[in-house]
Amino acid sequence: MEGKFATAPHWRGQRVGWVVLGLFIVAGALGLFGGGLLGRAEIGAGRLAVDYPRFARVAVVTEMRLRIRPAPGATVVRLRLPEAYVDRMEVERLSPEPMESELGDGWITYLFPVVVGAREGLVTVHFKPARAGVVEGAAALDGEAPLPLRHFIYP
Image (cartoon, rainbow, N blue to C red; front, side, top):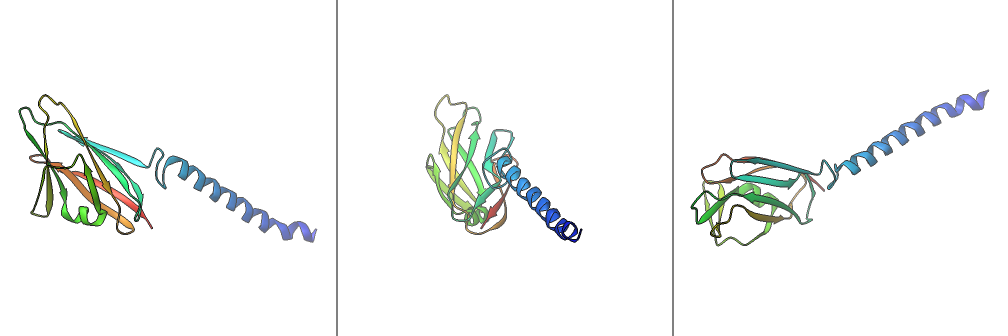
């Protein structure tokens, strides 16, 4: 009898361990640690749509894709990102490269030429987060409200 009662706490602990392990596996499959269904977010309004990672890792290059519809007759598209966001996320490069960039009012504005007749363009931002934690930022086109971005950066 004594042996049966002595092992009961052990079995409860083991069951709890299995449940926790199962939750980690499900969370990973859903993308809580990057990739998967929960790993990316998409937000859009007006002429801009942003596909970005919800989760990233410090010092690991990842990317954010911005689909831009130029205004009718526009020859240049002006994409704006907050200066603090660019610094915290350590933007390494943009593809295609902007023809020019401007700094002012806490924003960095990247200018891209519009191809005649183009209805949509894609800009990819390659970044490498500088430190762990929650990073909030935004992306905007001139004359439009900023779209909020939120990332959780793992160490």
